[in-house]
Length: 242
Image 1: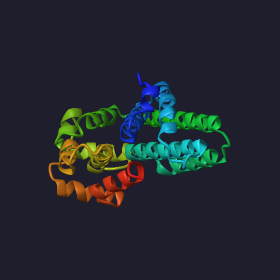
Image 2: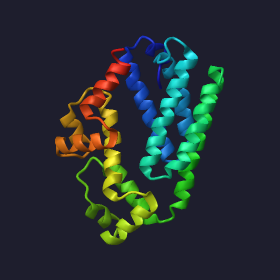
Image 3: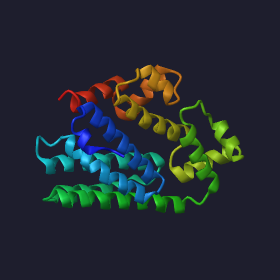
Image 4: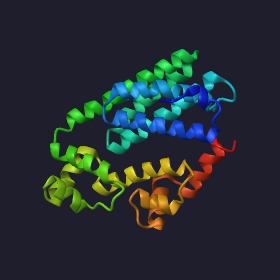
């Protein structure tokens, strides 16, 4: 259980690590369709958001900025799963407008709760539409083993179907091919590790399943527009050294 009184005396770096960890729990809970756990964690992170000021001393602006950032994280996660991005854009614009129009911290926090609920429903609706048990099994396998040197053959063997049939099904249900889906997961995980500044870029590339740092850096830049080194520098300049 988080001691928020103690956390007030922690360094900004420590509080940001707590924030990143809680955001990770929210993302995982939404991805799993676990609304209650997502909302429970959201109530905890609101206290952390207030302490990690990104509103120039204005608590309302601070909360708004954090929830907008959380919405972006959730959107990215859902897009990586392969859910229709146009639907997400509509929902995202709706919540951004509501957040910006809010005149109180209480109302803004409530909008965040509603946002999490709707995004969780998007995931649950998608799971109910994805009736193919083979693809659900494959996706679970990929998420549990992305850090290993898994190949298309490994996943096909796990679900016991041919590569041709699997590739056709996977693209149909996720909207992307196997390799892109796997790399998206790895890149998102690498972002979490880059924010902690405790591992070298080489170690991070290995930790998320890339054996070649150059290849990891190339894919990272293709995905984000910047290199892993630039991503880390930008993050720490914005949140740690400001």
